[in-house]
Length: 315
Image 1: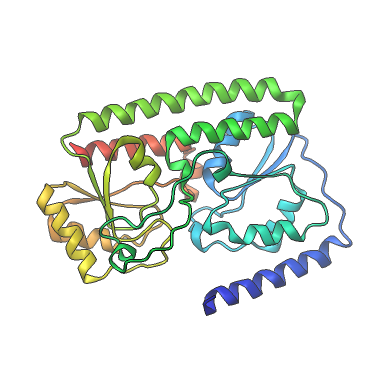
Image 2: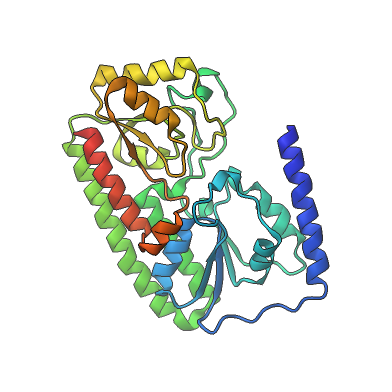
């Protein structure tokens, strides 16, 4: 364990100990008048729950607007929210290693659901061009970005729906209908992605950034190159990586280099400047900004925007 991880582990242990002290003299909060209390770590399950319940419950997302998910650390308030909720939904991947310690610290088990248990997972493999690929790293963990696939999103919604029906049987019919209606929309959008990819003159994407889109790429047979893997904490690619991605864009006459939300965008902008291509946001949906929230963005609207960027990149 490196020093940063050791420090984080010590901080988390201190937070958990503080929660123990607080909960020893604290009564559990009552459910909101609107229904169930549900807590999610990231935006996609938060939005899925809104769709499935019709907003008729108290839904909280732990990530603050604009916060980068891979650097998230729970606060005491966050831990208390998890302890008091009716359902806690988290990813269950590398970014959520803190969850097991927290759930194990509670006297009363929390009803929890992991996204990686609701669909088939794949290993996070360093793709060609990434720093990890160049360094020959061989240890691979399951790729946690399962929601980037519209097919997986449907499986995830059905899994959430099943859990909501078990938790709140009185409203099972509502949850089931809403889930079915929403999955129809997801399936229709999946069909649009397939049509766009099949109609393109290329099937190659270049990311001057991290690459959390293996599931999406596999769905549509896209060949992707990137500066870093999906959960990498690197920020500056090597000269060799820069050169590789620039050559790929120039060789295949690729019009667009992509970056993800809340990125510094430095690598993508530098590649765009060097090649004359455009730099465009391709949203992984981990989290949204305060402005996004005010504008009422949803998982589907973010994926629809991705579809427009895909048209530009492949045509």
